[in-house]
Image (cartoon, rainbow, N blue to C red; front, side, top):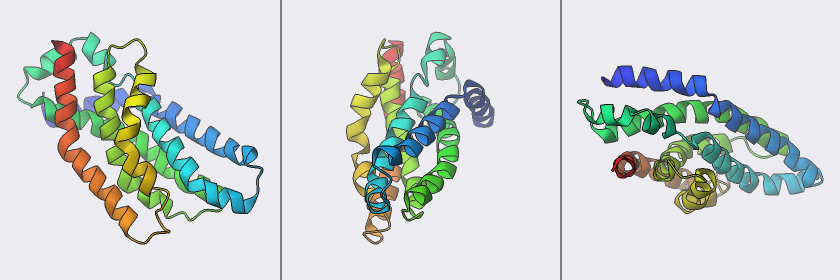
Length: 209
């Protein structure tokens, strides 16, 4: 299967499955209800907004990636893809890239809305744009490892949280600590792009043995 054909297949599959819509809906609903729990005080909202939103973003990503590879594993798709000219790491990069497009795209629209609702600086949306590839790719590796597990969702959250510590630590600091948080988030994503497709491919090969 050629790269273009695989990418089109993955984009159509992601659009049809609709996990991205559930993920974005959970993020928006939870984010809009959080001010009620915090009492609606503007100063408290501005202080709590960055950390709360980044934690919600991470959890929303996990929700959207749960079971990402299940259908292909059950349907024998990976067995056929292994025999194709494409390396399995390329296949995983394309699959996770399509997942990123459908997960990060709607969330990039939702993040500035919630930041403004909290009275926080909307520049946090730029930080999320830089961090989102790293969030998706690292979570995708754990999703590949958790495929076939009965309780893959909790396992995904438990295992992926340590991998996104840079985003959870430096994401809330974006706009308040100069350029450094943006550089670290971008570096985290670049490392993830370079490494995670190979790790995800190894995890899938492990599932096939």
